[in-house]
Image (cartoon, rainbow, N blue to C red; front, side):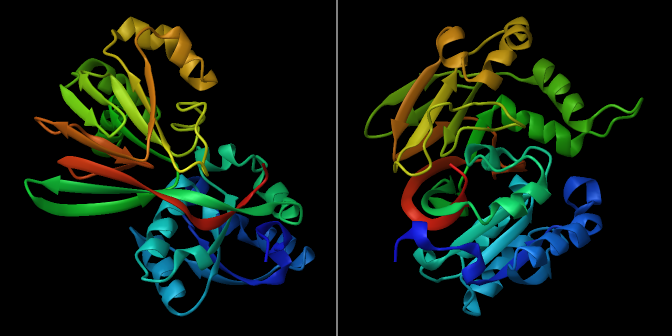
Length: 316
């Protein structure tokens, strides 16, 4: 059966809802979403993912129970948790179909797939969307010879400055005014960040230097709309590796707009844009890495591509 012929209305969907999404408005908006689903004759069962990693645990359990049609209501972090649940469940992931009702702050993965900005418009749009096979990345973390962690991702892994922003966001609380924790994290990271020497190796290339930040991308967007990997494709079997060189604070402040438009690869001197399906990242001391707002354990990173590993709803 062709993926293009599969319709959302053909199946009973297991909905995984993050009630803390949109500043704890997930449950508040559920009644509206349910009304839209019913109006569009979309069958479903609801499961709340309330707590750390509960999205992953819920998806894993549902897959092991035989379900193959999952729908996520939440942001990039919740989507990433569900993907990890799918890929650690022990099933054939090619049988899985994932639809998303974007309900987070950034919704960066949904931007790549041209999901409507309004979550209710997304539900209406389900009748027009189509399914497509999607690449998945696997990141393994090693300390010495021991693998200590592995995480799957469908969007972007980011290292260096962007990971330090996440670190500051997690461990810093504003003590004055009503300043955004994330913006405070950006401000603090700008003045604390010291680029570290890193070696990025693959069969295609080897990079050695002190990058300001770099990303291993499966899709285009990251950090609330920054077009960090403007040419990335989710179904070509390759990562786009974007490396920004060591730059000063003023360069960051005056040229960050180019990252939002994707023009940084031409307008910031020294940017490298590479492609590969497998790479390793070595730094001493270890460089910080993050995946959808969650820090990776420090160590040596091995990242590999799982091409066309499961199916997602797209509006492309």
